[in-house]
Length: 489
Image (cartoon, rainbow, N blue to C red; front, side):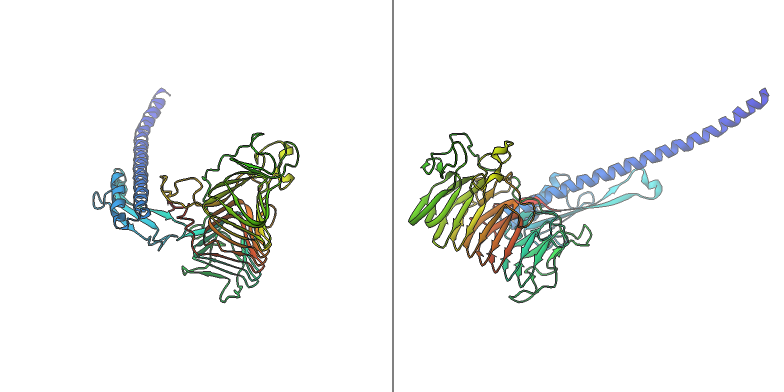
């Protein structure tokens, strides 16, 4: 028995040694594979970083109107990050405009493609001596005028964008509709939408004709019109656009108990309407005159209501603290140059006190309302100068005409209150951005909205009942407040 056991142990020793050797080789191979794949991934990320930096550098030259130095700047950006064309097998291609992707042919975009063969150390035992990597980046100078100036931000609703009943939207820019519903866009009953491009994340109603001639959807850019993502792969589908003014700084609002002047008076800080209750909200500050009236910047407790008269608004920021901004009647005309109107609640829109709910009445909160043959001609402060970061506006509200408090009541569905409206044969001419990201914006009943240099941003957009909206371009007053340089692909 002793000899047998001794023989068995010898056999085990003879088996374990080669097994251990094979296992060690396998572990070395696995370690080598891990090291090589880790190196390839690291090289890939370094190349992507260089491509991103190069695309941004080239786009900043485009932003500053230095087209002749786009390629030089892009190459310099890549070199700074360790990649130089012709060195160590690196190939760099720079395209303005891009030759592929969604921004193909867009002269406001710069495309950078970097290719390199990265050497392996352990994989040659498998016959793999090198792995080719290719990365791509696209940076866009978003001036809005050459791209998008109408943003409909609702994500899931039918009819988030609606143009109907012989109405029209003529936009020399891009329209972007975020809703993924299969009928996110409804253009019908002889209505017509013309734009540079029309992009819809979801679907749209098809087959309609425009009373002005041709299909209901018409694009200047050629190709598919509209571009939509219904039943398409993610690579071919438009992605939801981000709120273009998500980082816009709202003005400070003084809501202290003594912040409002006595009712129906003005002081250096603003004006108040009639006080409804002691310590409570105010009715709108009302202009009802057969002559002319000048309004000055400041906080308007109860908002502004123009019922009659020719009103001129001096340049500056106007804060509607409850009550909104209303112009009504054929005898009402408002003209304003270089103004920003910020619409907020009388108390803080997020105030937890139920007595302060903005749903209690229009004195607590109301909207933009231009109706009954009223006439307005309003423009935002010019967007000139530079505040860094690619933005060309010197002040936060430059280029912004209307700005609805982000915490204001939201429209839950198309047509649901609160609704900002240009209605009943009103004639409105706007220049600047109209920003109502969580609310419904409506042009209705033979109204004319000709925001010649405008950007429309709303949750829902409706143009109906023989109304017509025309946007000649979206530069905004003096330049686009959307102008920025950003990576887009």
